[in-house]
Length: 603
Image (cartoon, rainbow, N blue to C red; front, side, top):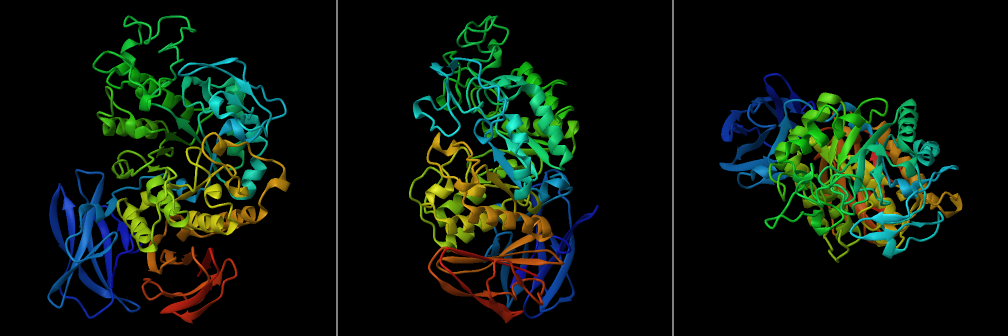
């Protein structure tokens, strides 16, 4: 067996290169090399024998850093009985691995150090908590694709799907501040708020003023107060940046003519006429065809100045005191660009990164991509992304047999394991550990509903979420088993009556968060698939000092054997987190799992 854990002491950054260790179980090898891609050309580095770690032979070399790209890519080749064997980041190969499966390492850390220690919590502000003196909306009409009446509802009243964007329940920022005790009791350390800036809709992704917090949420003063309260508790705040489109009712566009001045929709003589993308016929381009969301054109210097690069840009302003947020989540950022599409998207992501890091070097840049985000996650653009493709999608298909669009999509365990391995392999390890892992969000149905309100099944999903590489990101209500179908039902108000909570799920989340906060290997450790069966999978997270073993079973009661001699370090004794029993030795363990069960053991 060949193994290269991409963490210290088996992968260590130095000024000269990456000090790399390859581990091997078998007879001594005489020809061990690393294939390193430098300036788009392969180079071969010989690894030399360097003693043993238990039953593993150790081979080492320093791999030089690539000088022309954000990361250095490499794999390994050994000869055994005259035949080559290859090791890529996704496992062994019989031939040269595709470059997508090469290990990747960045010369310097990409994410701020604090990012790995977080448990994030996504809040849709209108639906989370309402303060005693919540201001409520002050407009009667929502100007989106067409004028719609505004509906103000009681907290537990269902939203009218026909008025989904213009129905308000009155949640506000002081309401969130009043519930920080609940969030801290969960182990939450970072709040991510969907848009809070002035808008006519409840979701506020159609922004009308980027420099003003919506008065219905309490205005600027409420955000300053919330940020200060979070900092006093050692918690972080991430806001949603909607940079690729505005509202049709933004004064720059002024579709409905309710603002003074001439907007881009009204005349080509408008000072903002060139700010919006247009098609060959000169008509405005709308985000995914939604006429409420005209697309900004970053080929116009004033757009870039206002949103990104200017000294008083939207990105810079909210990173500064008195709010001083800790990072931005970039909405649908892969679609931002010049003209009517995403032309020069990578250039603008690099500029976003440069601006954010110049303003606050320790701020976080998180991208939203509903599908694969690999090109944006190589060290020169985003710190990490909402991990729909590398976590949520495979989890849904394996556990609920549906994809994110709600279509039947069963996935067998072997393909589930392969999907997870390949998704991790495509990223530098420290970026993989910074990805935000969700089981659902405001853009999906609730997983609890999709699983038929099966508490055991959702506990399995949560266990993987907290133990897998990446930052667990709860969507408000996940911790109490909140249900919800398609939008707007997936955005139900949080029920603050504890009698409506599923306390078994709540206790499980608290236990998992405490576990993650106490185990460094769950924050930045290596991840290795040890074994799998028809309906179960065993994973290990480890560093040089500690290990955690995770075994998930989606099927009927079963007994499984997990080989431990695949790990680079031995474990003398395991502690069960949820009370499961195991028998065996350092070579492997036997354990019994109940139906839809998750077992966790810590060294």
